Length: 180
Image 1: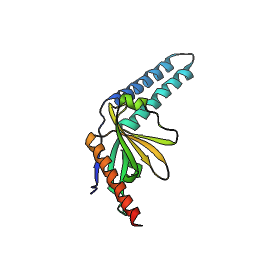
Image 2: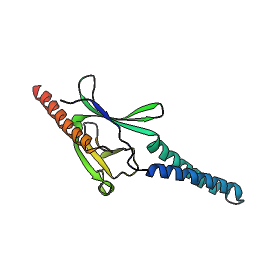
Image 3: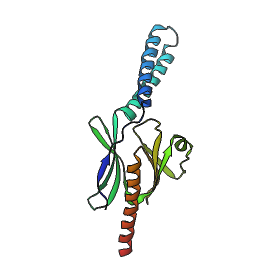
Image 4: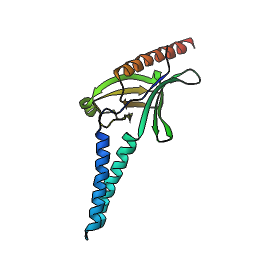
């Protein structure tokens, strides 16, 4: 039987924090330098803007956002895998797929994740709280609307439970289809 539950992964390294704060510091230093020089102020200020934008990107994607991976049942009893992100007071549903649409859940280390090539007909979604984690999981899904690869950062227990629940959901869907 599929039970509802939620998991929230914690960042496993400090790369995003270091990158964000280094980008902010570089932006401040470069802005200060641009006020002191007489030539090419605009170009130097442009570089400062680039570092400021990079810092904001790292901060909003990795530091201020909390991810939740939910296994739940919708109002019709269909088991779902849902990815939510909470940033500040805003909660956003990023992914909502039926568990029966999950075909594979594969563990990947950093090298395997970098070496993997997503097929052209597949969409790729990355929902990880860590910048370049040591271990991640690639969820391969197939629905009538799209084929996708979803990359999450989870524990081994969560991944094995997700795979088991997806098999149960496929079996349930097949038995309902056989009844018709």
